[in-house]
Image (cartoon, rainbow, N blue to C red; front, side):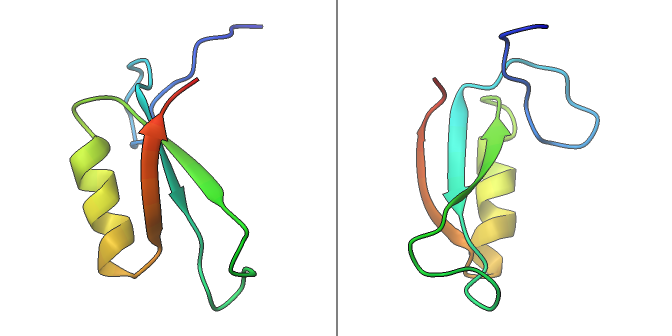
Length: 63
């Protein structure tokens, strides 16, 4: 099993550098955080997608 975190963008196999923390307030409690992983190339587009729906909370470095 690999310890490499892979970007969540469709079709991307790059190593993730960022964790986008989000939740859907219609179905999640306010403190719950879901995580999408993003490489440098996809962090902005994934954040924009989540932000447009008011789901994005913060971006932190991938661990």
